[in-house]
Length: 107
Image (tube, rainbow, N blue to C red; front, side, top):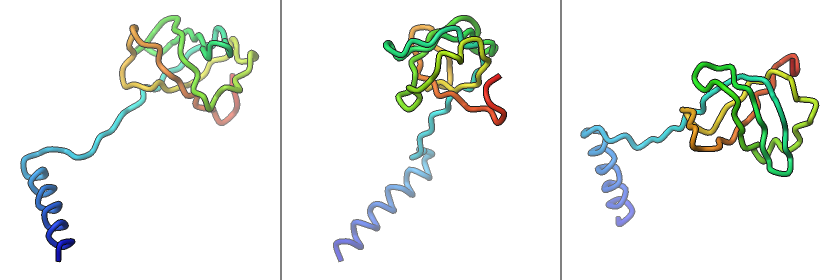
């Protein structure tokens, strides 16, 4: 019987939130950019990219995602597509990136 009362209370709260417009979901979008790799520093876990995308143009240094520590120095000079850990490019923050591998390999 207690479980039924708890369940009904939870359903009532969720229904109330839905009626007054409180969204219980949360989403974080990642900004997708492209640019040319200028340097890779494995010791500092950084990659410097000349970003060509209009939403975040210029030479920028990013933190390399821990899953992508195997980035090779032969990426220097290659154009890549990558996402950052934010929906906006912030000059005051060193964003973490994830490289999106192209179907045909790096260009």
